[in-house]
Length: 215
Image (cartoon, rainbow, N blue to C red; front, side):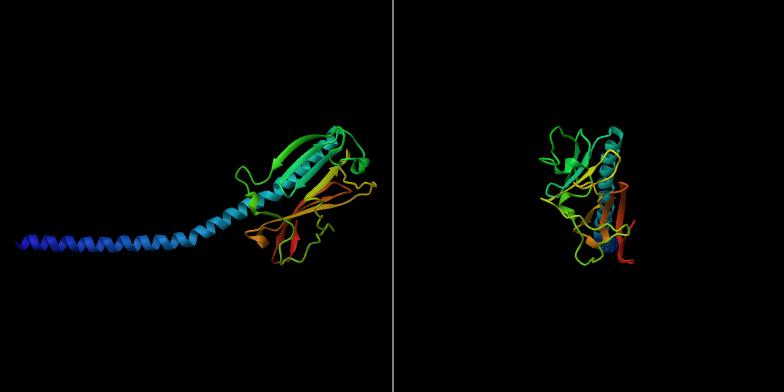
């Protein structure tokens, strides 16, 4: 009888200790999860946001390379409403294209590529914002480029056969697109600039410590 009582007491003791330990482990795991999950989400946003300017710059460079290799004008167009990039092959040359009827969809032009942003595991389109975040006042880059305004929610950049970017009068013009992730604006503010006279394409990222966009 005494042996049975001792056994029962021992069982209850072990059972109580095990339950306390389990609850403690669950509580600690819950706290760690609550702390870690937001950090993981933020880190993933930063990684995905970093891919946006690279993708935009890559498509700009593609349009420029095609213009130079095929010796005819190619246009890079960003549509902010659709969060989409379109590459247009004009199958023609000359800056007069910029004042032609229906530009950039001029007679004989064909769409070479259409690239939706925010697909394939990249930054969601809903988080892509065009422009400069509120609170950042520096918008002029070190190469003197300033934000290019949207026209009908689009920005159109036409590369000539020599790789330059000109206006309808044949003058070299710079073009700059500013973006940020609206969930973490200041941490993801970036820009992609094109120097008209050289056609050089650069990626810039905002650095809070320097209060400017750095290449």
